Image 1 (cartoon, rainbow, N blue to C red):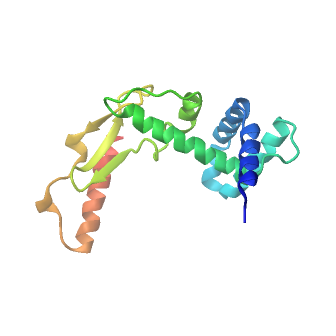
Image 2: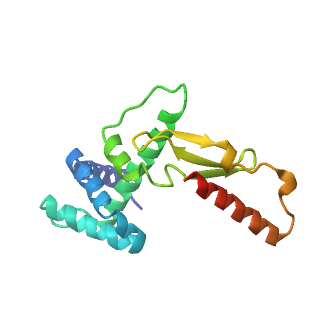
Length: 174
């Protein structure tokens, strides 16, 4: 059983471990290893990042694969919630010191900025960038939505062709 004093000590160590410079170094390393996350086992990439951080800050195994990955997940969660809050109309804009650094890493990722969305209410919508530098999107209703319920076939093979049709229409949006 873990007592409260052990939890407090663990939190204090974690706060000391992650100074602003170390967090920025983590963000830079994740950006540097971005392509490896797609091709290599994520656990191995986090281990490499931990080794690099230990080397950078001359630590003896202070950074572990687990605490590096956990820190990244927390940063990513904070970034996503701020992105949603700041893009919602009527909300006061919140600031975060790591927002711009995280935006350079995650801003173009499909999980943050989906190329298309689909719902039962509005159908398929493709999100098109107005310009490369802007992060706001414009929805192209004419090319990408398929709200015609009469054209939806009931058979499973018809469903696949309908899905292919939507996919082709969405590729026109890109």
